[in-house]
Image 1 (cartoon, rainbow, N blue to C red):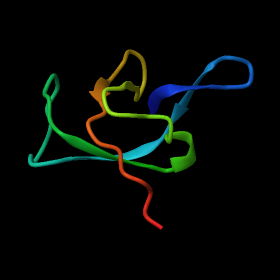
Image 2: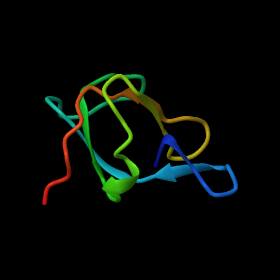
Image 3: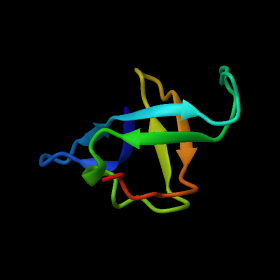
Image 4: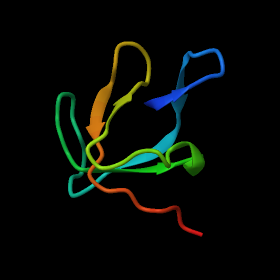
Length: 77
């Protein structure tokens, strides 16, 4: 679940889902950093993101991690 800046009609934070996998590493331990890829489950909700944007990951409270967008690719047809 990612906070990518979207809000509900009532102004509440809306979390969006994406598949995540770590690039070039077998695993990512607590506090670690790595390049990861996200594959959105609803690409239309992610189209506003651009390189340099920082997004926040939640599995529960508190925050699970943050990511800086370094590449944006269009969804596969």
